[in-house]
Amino acid sequence: MPKTKVPAVISTFCLCFLFWVLLTWSFTPQEMIAGAVVSLAAALFTSGFFIHENAFRLANPVRFGALIAYVFIFLGELVKANLDVARRCFGGCREVNPGIVKVPVELEGDYAQAMLANSITLTPGTITLDIAEQDGKTWYYIHWIDVAETDREKAGKIIKGRLEKGIRRIWQ
Amino acid sequence: MRIVIDILLAVGFVFALAGTKGILQMPDTFCRMQASTCITTLGTAGVILGGALYAFFVMGSVSTGIKALFIGLLIITINPIGSHAIAKGAYKNGVRPDKEMEIDDYGRDFNE
Image (cartoon, rainbow over all chains, first blue to last red; front, side):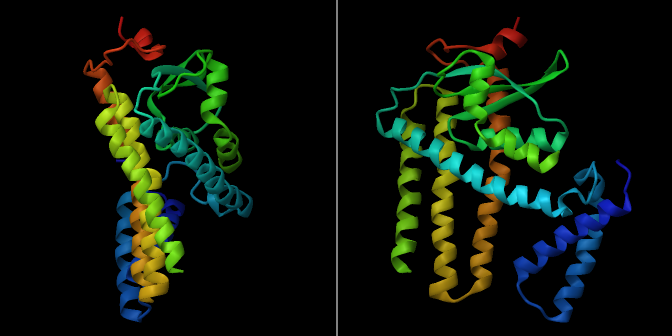
């Protein structure tokens, strides 16, 4: 079991308590105290699994602003990809050209890489199958519904689009 | 406001229909999974945003709307983990498309 650290407990507690308040949406003292106790217990047990790096990294306003900006960047990409896949589906499902490409990624840190992989998977048309480290670089294996480009660098540019830059601004 | 809600619900419905058609008609397993992502992203986003706006402005109940938004947040965070695991598991268990894939780096690197 990972070690429990105080900053990690505090930040996990804040997140749990925020969720509690938003879910119950009642501001009587009894509810708040019960929420605080439950959140503290949950934070004590789970913070070691939840937070591995600096616990207050996102408390920085610049990084938080980058996170908000990233949500909009991601929504834009999401709508574009959704329209593309929906068009293929309504067009009789014949216009597909699937394949698995290997794409280099220049992000460092577990959170950043996981965030990019999940964003790519959430975008219709691309699913991240695996992450591998080779020659000191990180590679994603991505199943792509329409392989427009077999060259790794160019395929990476098409798939990642503006996502990678947005994520680097959050976690650098 | 009712018009906005109806438009959002209709958008969600259209994308869910597209995803369902894709799941039924796509040629192989991985492409079917790609089509299903369509349902979980804009399909649910449209319906959940519409439902949340309905709760906020028509029912006048803030807590119901926030719960609807939470459902959307949870689906958005959990879905990619599931699709990644299913796709990787299918590939490792030897599921392959009938037609030869355009390029298959994963098979070349791991399945000698």
